Image 1 (spheres, helix red, strand yellow):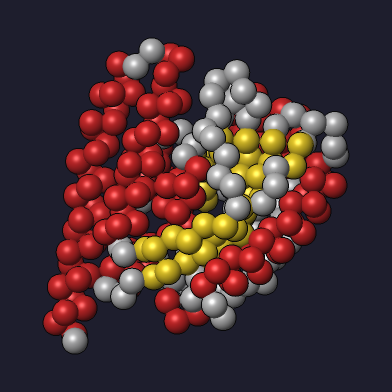
Image 2: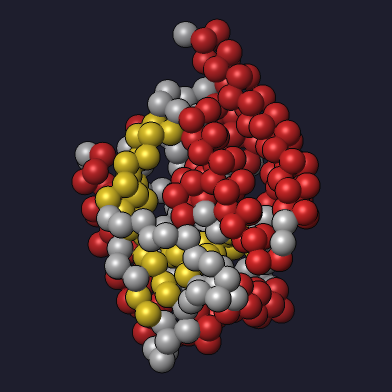
Length: 257
């Protein structure tokens, strides 16, 4: 059992680093040569390809309830995806499902391999301890939404265990209101036995632990879009929080208690 787990861990962790390192220069070359109008579509294709490959590598089986909307295009109304945050796996699941890019904690930019990949696809980094960083993040989200991009944020601010959805930070909802964007609420749930929760450990430790785990079946429930145009940020924050709480219950029902 121990030998098998270690072999699986080495295979998956090595595959993660190898796949990310191999795809990054190929993506950058394709993105750099694409016409300006096509760049978002090129990024979405490569991001989804990378994320889906990693989900297969780590044996993550995603069960989806609800309607996944088509990808946004430049000139469309931008889309802000808001969801609860439980695991580093969330990033791969959301990118594989919706494409686009993410808002992430600032220190991810310095992580080996992953940081370079995240920077290359336009990830917005925020230091929640800095008011200046928070204001810059709101402006960056607003600009992305105004040109029709899809951007995902975890408004709880960090990862938590269990299904209870903590209060949302309101900054991204200010950006959505200003941009007149569409807000898409999403709920995520993992089996309690999966060990997927990313709590009190480094990313490398989390990656190593998940790399030796058995297959994980997780649920994702997609809600109805919320139009942000003409609605105050406080109301949007409250509505989105209530929707995500309800959707987490739906996601839990997909995979059992």
